[in-house]
Image (cartoon, rainbow, N blue to C red; front, side):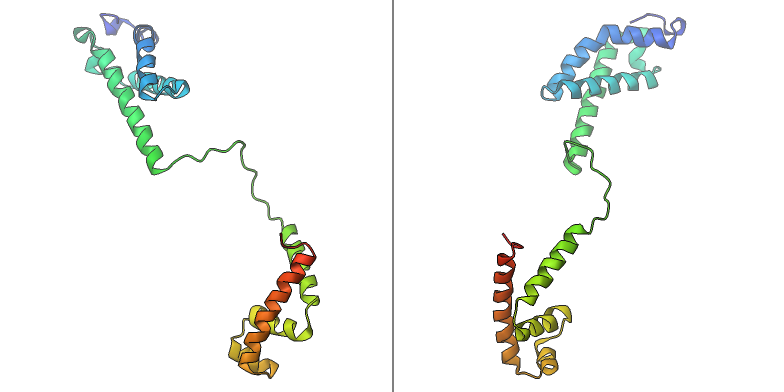
Length: 177
């Protein structure tokens, strides 16, 4: 570390700081990051950036020889702790590729709708009418019974058997696994 900071420009100061402390700081950061060499490099870079932003710190004066390494270690440790805390609050979601922007593709919905309509056509008229009333028109059992002019118990029974028949029809046309 140069003895007289006033005579040394910023570049020389950072070069001297790097030359004297970077290797030891990197080894320290590797231990702090659990052996993650890339993360350790990021910690060292951020630590040296903070040193560059704070050149007037008492740790970098000639009277405090040896204090610079302690300051750098403290900053590196705080960076690692801050990163750990940030990840524990908002864990990163790692993906293998950058996601494509969401584009509305209605093809699947259209195909499913068509398969469902085909399966409905395979049902008897009575079963289809009950399902349309209950699920498309969102009628209650009482309202469906009134619209179809049948008993409420018949609506319940027909809906049960209609759903079973619909599932079978969807299986037959390959819409269900």
